Length: 322
Image (cartoon, rainbow, N blue to C red; front, top):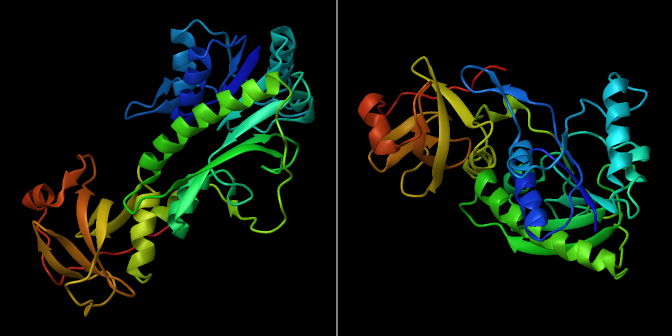
C-alpha cells in the first residue's frame, strides 16, 4: 500500500510514525508551511515535517490546495506531487488545510481522516478542547472516509476511551494520538482486503467544535467553579487560561474544586492563599489554584509561586479585557 500522509502537529506525527514503522510506502508527506514560533519568532518546521525529514520522506508544504484560490501555483505543484505519488490512499490527521474534491478523489481508495472524537459529536477544529470544556465523560477516535463536508464522511472504525477527571487537552491528546495511530493501521489493513464496512453518520447528536479563540482563555470568575475548572484543563497547554491580579497577567494551569472554604466573597476574590493553594471565589463555588505562571516565568506549584508573588486574602483577580 502506497500511503500519502497529510498532517501538521504532534498529534499527526504520532500517526505518521506508526505508518512508517508498519512498513507502508509513504511517497509524499503534506504539512503546513513553517511558522514563526518562540521568543525569537524564528521559522520552525512542524512536528510532521521534522519526522519526515529525519526519515528521508518527500515533503510538500503548499499554502493552499485550491487550484482556483489565492495560491494556485502551490496547488498546482501539490497536484503534480500527488499525481506522481500514485498513492492507494491518503491519511489525514489535523492537517489544517481544506481538501478540495480533486484531492479527495486522487488516491485509489480516497482519503481517511483520523478524527479525535466520536462522530458526529464534535465535528470541527477543536474536538479535544471542547469535549473537556463540556464535561464529557468519554471521547475517542473515529477513522472516517473523507467527503466534501466538515467531518461528515462515513465512519469506518471507532473506539471509545474515558476522559479522566484530571485530563488536560495535552494529556488527552497524547492518549488519542496513540489510539488514532493504532486504528488507522487497522483501517488500512482492512481497506487492502476490501473489508471495511462504512457506516453513515446519524443526524442526531451532532455538535461542532469551533476553533479556540485566545480571548476564550480569559477566565470569567462570574461563571460556576465547575465550568472554570474544566476550561482551565481544556486550555492546557494552549492557549492557557489567564487572569489579571496586582497589575500582572497570570496563567492558571492547575486547580481543584474547593469544598472546605465557603465562597463568601465577590467573584474573583482571593479567599485564602497558602502552600495548599490559592482559593478564589467564583460565581458559584470556589476554586483552589495549585499551579500558576507569571509573565516570562515558569509554571510553578503554588507554594513556589507564592514565594515570589505576595497574594493575600481580599485581593481580587480580574478578567482580562479582549
